[in-house]
Image (cartoon, rainbow, N blue to C red):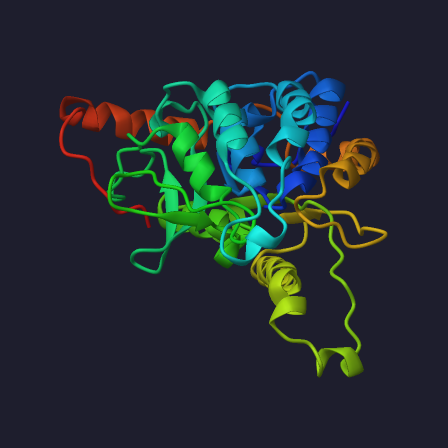
Length: 336
């Protein structure tokens, strides 16, 4: 039997899922293995799920109650089509890929459901281009937050996944345009920590964050090469280094703000850099994801997976009850 820690019922648990394009297979495999070994639904074990890009798509699907196995199988089945038919020379003036296959997959997953229909509270990131501002999309789980979660879930997931260079910007509302939230929060652990403290009013000593990456290794650049690099060489290297730098900063801040045992980062070093659109290479992350779950299972169960989380869902239900007479009214636009 897993020993219980004192006052576990007062712990606020956050699941934070990184962006990483096709490398999201690591996250999906990791969570699938946990669900199947423990016979639990992962979303039931957390009060809040936060995600960016592929991590946002996976997290949102979990929040609607989908099994992680279903998500993993769907990505393995359709991933190749999402990254098919790259533009080569056309990349100079257009994104590398269209988003029709990605859009169809997200519409098949979420249908016509709105963001507020989730069972577990969520936050997804994107970067809004028309106002040059980070956007945190969320369901209506905080009384003081001016957001009703009426947006189509598939459209929010598409906006969070619209990686610059690779995919076109995505529109959620009539007059906006969004790209991947990895521009400011590829590792969204700090988004989860801020949401827990500011909107769920949780003391820091009650917050626990399980942060899951998508594998990490940027191309190493010696100085004699760096001094000669121009736009052509930097076009994708800059994006990859930016994502890794942001994720590492978020990791270091989170582990310094929280005591040992409150924050856990699951990631895997890559034997070589994987581009976020290298789907065939990303398939190799399925087994490392499963292995990470198997080797860390006891500790994760003790600290994060010890029973259903209730604080987040109770707050969401309370806010929904308060606002129910106002449903169908004007949609509020601010999400931060």
